[in-house]
Amino acid sequence: MDQDKNSTSISDKLRDIFNKPLFILILITVALVAYLLKIQIKIGVPYWDVFNYLNNAFHFANMGNSGVVNHLPPLIPILTSLFFRMGYVSVDVIFILSGLIFILGVIGLYLLLNERFDPTKSLAGSLIFISSPVIMAWAVSGGIDLPGVVFSIWALYFMVIGLKKDSKFLYLVLPLLVISILTRYTAGLMVIPMIFYISANFYHIKNIPHIKKVIFGIAIEFGVLITIFTYFIMQLDTIALFGLFFDIVTSSSSGVEDVAYNSNFLYFLQNSWNYISLGPIQGTYRQLLNPSEGLPSVLACIIAIISLIGISSYIYRGLINGKENIISRVNFPNLGKVAVSLILFISLILSFYNKSLILSEIFLLALVYILYRFMAGGRFEVDSKLALDLMFLSWFGAYFIFHGILPFKVDRYFITMAPAFTYFIILGLSQFIGELKPKIKYLTSKSGLVYLAIALLCLSVATITYVGHTPQKTFTVDINNASEWIKGYDPDYSNKIIGSDYPNAVTWYLHKDTTGAYLKYFNNTDEFADYLEENQVYYYFDSNKSHPTLKGYRIIKIFGVVAIYEKITP
Image 1 (cartoon, one colour):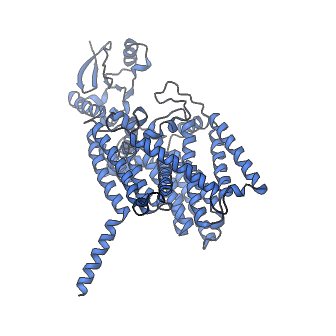
Image 2 (cartoon, rainbow, N blue to C red):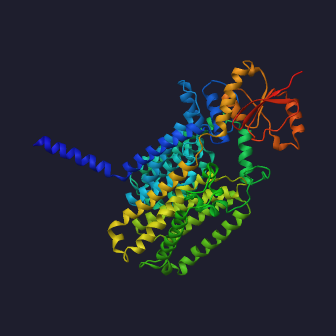
Image 3 (cartoon, rainbow, N blue to C red):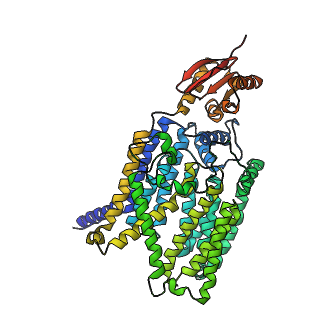
């Protein structure tokens, strides 16, 4: 009898586990990442910077110093180098590492969303996040954009639950923030939503048990972490690093000739529909990596419209509903807050369009805090939700301002805004469906199915689009094949100067410094050939499909889109 009870208890527990939205989310994410890894390993490295991380990882593993770029964030190369030290030297390492970090990030986003929404909405939000073309295409790419966001999500989550539930989690916030910054420097912008949320909960913080002990512990932790952080920074090329920082802050680098140059301040807002979902019929792999070049799907348009209606309703209800509605609080004592809010908003717009990054971020932080102080009604449950709403708004705003002012824009930069963007999609859907519940009886008991249906539809469209447009391989596989071939063709290749228009890739595959040589910077092929001659380039790896005739050089082998030129010797 007891055995039957135990077996029943175990089966009930297993059933409960399998019914949990987080468990379902993990299963879906792991399966998707496994598939994405299979494809990514086949098509190879998708973009330039990944080879820099691989070359740096090779250096951190004490295996060579070729192609090292000292000013890049060190964490992903360091983690990759640990696998290199164990003997597994392959580009696959950085893909797998990215996939594992991505899974961790999806879990963290679910938990963070669950602080505001119920488990079903949090599951739906996490699936919509995964389904974003800019997320799915870059999830296992080996880049640092998503890992930086992942550690930022966890830092923010531990801060929220540390202030709301258990102060012990606050000890994890600073380490994760430092880790996120060492993963991607712009993760430092997360201090904007963090400062806001701490300020919004200032009165609650004073009531946290042993708060003085917690603050003292965090202060000690801060000292240790700032020492570690300084050590890592000192190992980098500080001149290049601070030069880059100065250019960003002052917007003094125009970069007009750069392919990513874009002066459109509202670039990411105008392309936001494309980041929800791309049309599953049309498209290319390039459009998966750069959704702004594609077209939004009908589903994206529907979700965007519904979310906008829902958020508008949410704002309207907040203004007029309740005994302590905001309109009723626009009295003489609060007129100052209203005036300050308007001044801050106007100042934010002006500073943004005048490329004043630091001022814009300060005005943003001040604005969301004043809005919270004005809108908060003194009810903890309501104020807690409002604090989260404005925290995510400051998250989105901080990165939107930064990347809007930055003169270089590529779609993967939207990854930094994607979690906050997803938050407001779910907030809008939640409000919209909530407005319909009194009118449609089905939604009262089955609204959870609606969220899941929308999320699964997004995931299906994204997966179909990805499957339909990922190639069998990219040109970086051709560079790999060309590099392997040259080793057999000329065993003395390491003693000869090699040039390429994709030097960091050739450097990685040959583990030898490669001279950068770019035909587009010259008036004609003869000038370019003279440049190769002057730099004593013996072999030239060209990834340009046209493969022009170069004076003094001949093509000795072609692999797909990559041609190997050899210097003609008398």
